[in-house]
Length: 381
Image (cartoon, rainbow, N blue to C red; front, side, top):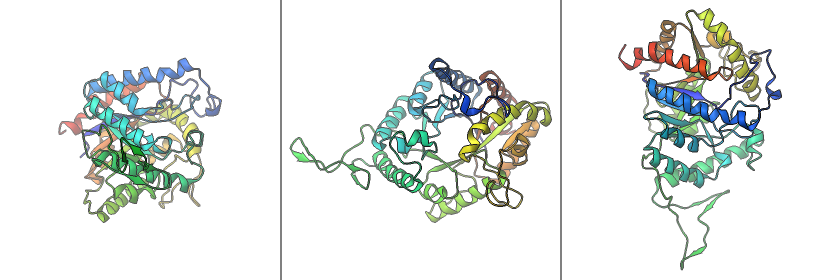
């Protein structure tokens, strides 16, 4: 039963001349003052969501983006600050790009945030996908196998640090602690100080392909599935459930997943599509080259594979795929009910803020959704 409603803000500034025929993504370059605006926007939107009764504001870690699409480099720091500006809203890390961190530093920073916010920062980890970012931090991205190998060892360290009173780790990339003399004895173990108070730590990871599923489902890591077509989401949900069962985790279908969906409310579906189209298209101008088109054709073949479409999607494609909900509140409620009925374990829905939409309009959408859609689910409607 869906009862937790959140939003994803990847950290875009207010962009001008948006849409398919607007300014090319790679031609955008903004000065520092404009890029800093996103932090004030995050505060404004967080306070708005807090007042409206939303569950969580998710943000994304990225670096070097003078183009203005994703400008938050440190989600734990951001979430800790935003928690001081709000009362109840949680702040999710979608995601801390682990190969760009030392796992012990990430563990310490998260533990401090957990304590200072009383558990209002939610941990999320990812492997990254921008070569400009990951490779510039000295970690592999072009070599996918090396990236995966590093990430999985970092996760071992992170989980040990969170869960064990004292620990050691000796792998390919990390020797913790080194066998050095300290105050008259040789180091054998170390303790994370402090550790999070809320344990076991709730950890989320993006599901970008089926290859991710065995790893996360069998370890109790929760999965975020964002802007996927219905066929892709269904395959993910069923595979996640099956892989979790292999590790003795018996889950209802959809449990431990978050369904991320595009949204635009208007009096009619046609009006909603017309209004959101330039914002939708601005998103895919930036994200489609990274492979973020997760739709399937009628035969279940993912877009980009032989025989399936291989193009930038339109908003009409997104609506047909049920990755975008567009129309009046009653229509959107029906769309959410469809997923809720199909996936009885699903309890979280996340609204994706289309990157071309300005903050004022997005806040209006959040308010309308909270007023006329959320009560149908949170108040037994």
